[in-house]
Length: 415
Image 1: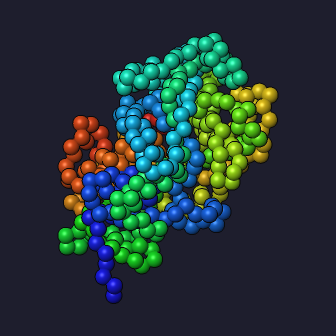
Image 2: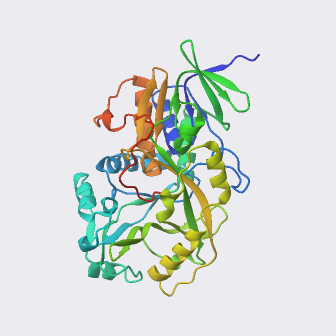
Image 3: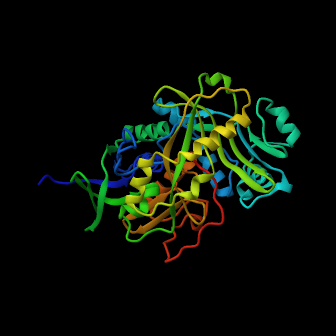
């Protein structure tokens, strides 16, 4: 039998958080192995891991709740330029971020995510400039867009759209440049051995490490890699991609839009500026209210969901919204893509030690835009074995599943 190679740390999961963790571990001088599957060619017959980062655009901004999410994002954004310059991978595009919601008289049951005063207060706490618009001012600022009557807005003009695929590429490139090894495989088991952990992949290859970081995202509870399930929920989300013939004709901000009529939510989600996808075509990306309609509690359920390609019903909702929002514009074909998201009761990441050799790091609500900072915090905890950051560790400590864990009060579209 060939001797198993030994690393200081093995990172299980090669998505945004796993890749960022590996990068920051190498910058602390650790020898690192990253194990995670590459993106599959398609979803129709897919069997196995499917990641939410298989996408071209996510918002990176401070118009978020809770405040801690915005703080993690701002820390990440401050390192974007350096990471892009060092790796030659452009993953962040400057773009206005506009959040639109009904005024106070139309408050709905989920408006903490679209509470203009709260969003403005969080931005002020972080010394980030934003502008607020009345319904009249909103229409004046964006004359080509038609929002529902009585809706107001808040904009951060110096926000970004982050390409999650490119972000992962940059993080891994930076890690590899400092000696990290990347293996495209799936980890099937972790075994505690003398002075560390033995990691075995699906292909039969194995390694040993002093410590292991489990960064397997929405699939964490079905992976079987932790001794017990975390208090988190996994959902199958739907992304609707609507083709546009000329992206220059759609010079619009990236938007979070809560449309409410008579106190009832008619749409709640994102409308992303045109993005170019791997097929070379340009699409407007929408993801609306069906986010929490598809809970996934097993590997088999995940496989079934991925193979559906997403909810076809969401196409009609997206086209109706775009026709109202962008009158007179011509849209090409629309199709869906499956996505997976997870949420925690705190709406914050879990960054915590499971035991003396194992650390877990998963997103709470906004994985891609805050991934670099989540990875830095995870790397520091892994190496130091104690929490050393000024942010309180209690905010990120893992919660373990109870027989009937309480569901979070609210959630918003994140894809």
